Image (cartoon, rainbow, N blue to C red; front, side):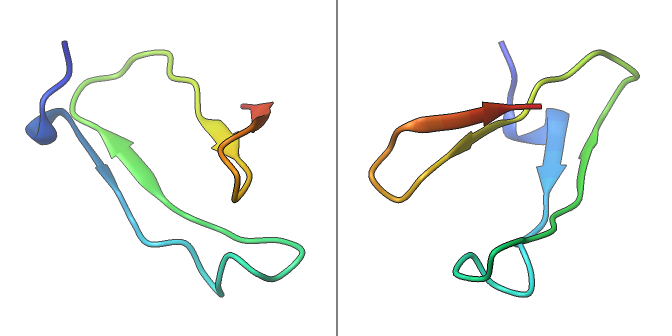
Length: 48
């Protein structure tokens, strides 16, 4: 199970209401990760 010390994720920019956004994340050890993107009503729209 992941703890808060196992990963870091930055605030998205420029902001979530533009047609695109960018964010950075890091994990404490090299590993495969997936990032799930949700819309404003909680529906999953993409898995990266």
